[in-house]
Image (cartoon, rainbow, N blue to C red; front, side, top):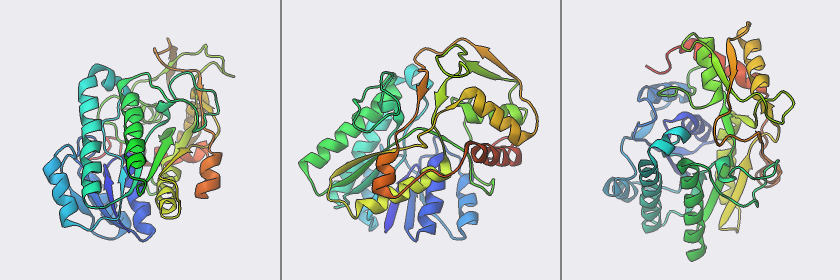
Length: 337
């Protein structure tokens, strides 16, 4: 298939592009490079051994989006593009709603006009809000605690309504948990543009000397060691889940399918820290501070639906995640150039 990957130069998108090409698909990447570095493209070309078709524009530009679909024969879309920082979304809610919703409207409108009906949407476990029972299942009610999460809830609903109006659509809503890790080559990985919002890149930056110490938010949760528990999934497993979902859309009679992508196991902040220390070979400076508002004690997936229907399973361990992250960070201490 000829697959359009929006946000294909980003962290998860870039890993997915490699696996799509390995699976024999022809890929077009659209990226505004608001959250990605142009140097990613050359690294992807080196890893795949072939030139990459990259279009640099924002999907909120309706005319450019329309022209792309008019000029190219596209069979399916994987939609990663969007603003993604939870904290920033609280500070800039209007910008998040405008960018994430309008870009999706522009994309889906162009798809409909040019009869492209297969879409894999990058959703998030944030749609389960802060009251869902663990392990979280796809039929749980959705809600959110911040504007970023609400954009995912809203887009999921929009896509369901689009498919309800036209059942010829085949849409996958992929709710994934905490992506970590890097490509085993150490060539591409996660490179936050500012202070990391997530645990793993923060630990990695402490390990490489860019940060003084790790702040652990909350040591008094009702968990085995008092720190928050999350379902961390290797980005390579996550990318494989997107490829599996894309293939499944060609085989299902259901218009909208929702799948959790996670390991089904929770790992605490301290457990992840100690695993990273094993990868680095020494202890890392850290301190326990007050909880952050809105954080919950534990969150992990029930991935059995994806395992049964996609034939997909996360296989990489927490130690694999840390080793691959450290290989990337130590080889690229300042991230991408």
